[in-house]
Amino acid sequence: MDSARQSATSGPPSPASYAEVQASAEFAQLRRSHRSFAFPLTVAFITWYLLYVLLSNYAGGFMDTKVVGHINVALVFGLAQFASTFGIAVWYSRHANAKLDPHSDAIRARMEGTQPTGETESTEASA
Image (tube, rainbow, N blue to C red; front, side):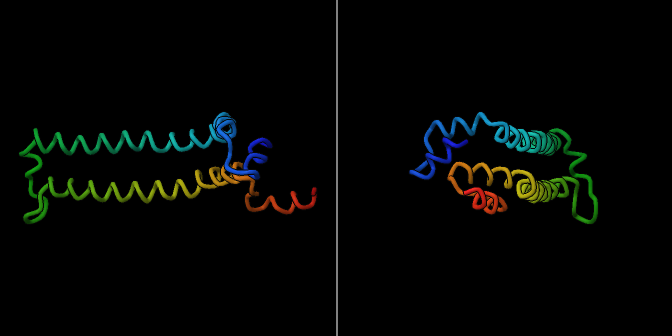
């Protein structure tokens, strides 16, 4: 990663530096962490959404079932779509803050030639 650090001090990182980072184990772990969260959740949400659409089209009697007063199953499912979207956004934000951001910040710091928090003392002592 020294070539990435040297190119960052003289200007923006070179394309070779980006290729080097992309080939690194830390970047692969970052991508794996993102994909293992995002892909299954995306599939689950799309399945949930399509279930709502299919039930609305083909199970009108069920969706018209009254739950309380004038509130029917279709309205409850529709509102649950909004709630689940908001819940997924909050869940992803927490996941990104805890698992993705620290790794991406470290990679970016190396690319830009700056030291991530906590590494400044050891670098200054060796210089």
